[in-house]
Length: 404
Ligand code: FAD
Image 1 (cartoon, rainbow, N blue to C red):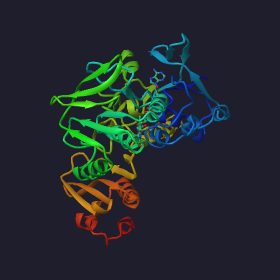
Image 2: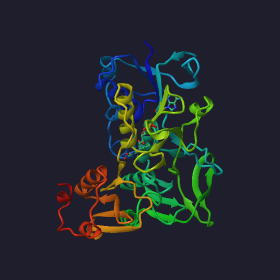
Image 3: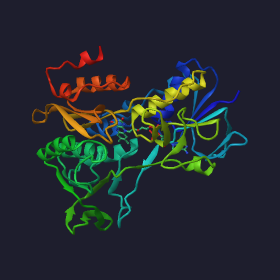
Image 4: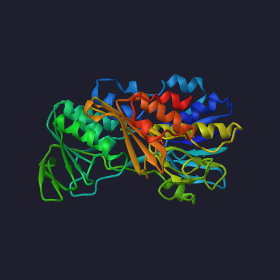
């Protein structure tokens, strides 16, 4: 009996192994892990773990015993090639592993900054546990950091670095923070909060080179000619999906490994899930690649169901969160393409939501410190429900009523 072989032990791969067992799958399950740790969670790496003094174990999904008990064969290795005709995975160790079904859960890797001196030791990224650990240790020394990119990870890092007493500059090409992901209402709120915390935000500029002395970073030069002093540069300019394994096996890839509404690749024996997968979204009627824990874990559950005889198309409702300083942002749905935004609550008081509409229908809810709006948004969007914009704006309107 050949195993369900899972490549990548991140959020998607781990969840698939767990969900297979929960669904009663009794055959062998192998999880190929190319990181030097037990499978772990990423969100805390730019949040609690970065801030606190927690041990690496605190971010592990489960202790080693769990894998033994669940008969999940956790294999320390790296997949390097797929032999589709033989249904075998070739690994860096030299081992060839046969599979009954192969699931690519290879995630994504940091997009690297491509400017002079970007390879110096003081230029750091934040995706893995080791990278978070390295950054955490840098806090003790104080100093000045330039964060390149005002996306979720850059901003979460910036807020923590500032709280730890560092001087922080954030450089962003777009005219506002998180520009690709949230409405201007949300960007404006977070900009104000970060500026109040003493972070300097620079919009409409790029880092063009890094200056150094004796191999140590001394600053960052911007596209408008300005020079920012720094002894540390943290880069958060997005990720690249790990599609190479699939591409080299002649599986179709574009901005992700292409899968259908069942998360199957062009090969009926190979699925792809999580950050690496460009899936045919039933909900949105278009190919979509998302980078979130929700997407990784719900897709894992969908494939586990299929492999245990319950085939359904993937139809998870996207949701996401980000903690920046004391503020919690939560997003339900996908707000791209909205044509109307209605604010509920009061941004000045630090608690509000942006209800996003497209052609009169609710498509997403972005909440700041309003957990109940987020929960409502998830529940209503999951059933393709909506409420009128004037109801959303009216704090006296009980959102729960719309669910009844
Ligand atoms: P990954 O978690 O990237 O796992 C893929 C794994 O596959 C990795 O371990 C990789 O090393 C391994 N791999 C790759 N190639 C091979 C190979 N050839 N052989 C073997 N193994 C391989 N999302 C949220 O929803 N909320 C948040 O607050 C949030 N915060 C985040 C904070 C940080 C710092 C980061 C980095 C991400 C955050 N995310 C958050 C995003 C979320 O963590 C990802 O969407 C999620 O991890 C995707 O899971 P995945 O399993 O698809 O990929």
